[in-house]
Length: 124
Image 1 (cartoon, rainbow, N blue to C red):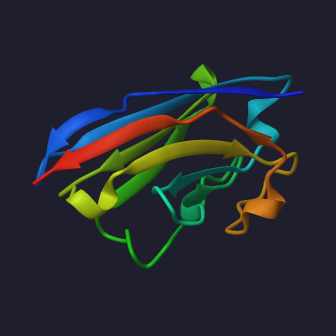
Image 2: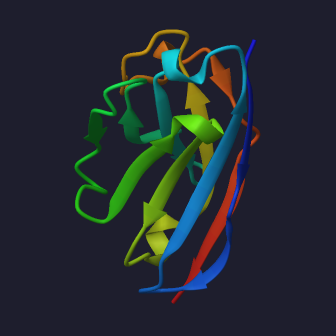
Image 3: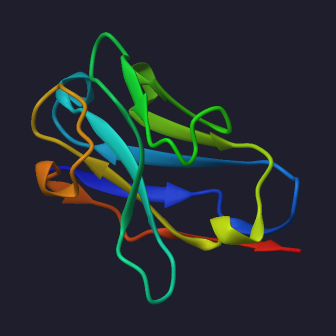
């Protein structure tokens, strides 16, 4: 069983940056592929970025590639999402997710555990 708690959301102005954190409690964080997703009002949940367990390989959605960076600190059971040049379209609830496998994944059905989300609001 893995519990995920996101933090770092808030209200920012367009062009600013924000870093989200997700702390995982579980038996072996190294064995969890991790991902970040977001859901804006009225829209489906959207994949953003993913990172594998040990090697730290990453993959990004085209919509955020070059602006968002996913990273992890296995010693602290934490995964991060650095978001640069935020725009009003980035306003959403951001979710952290964990897989029971150490590989990364882009499909939300590949994830077994989800946090409750953190709200990010970007004003113009």
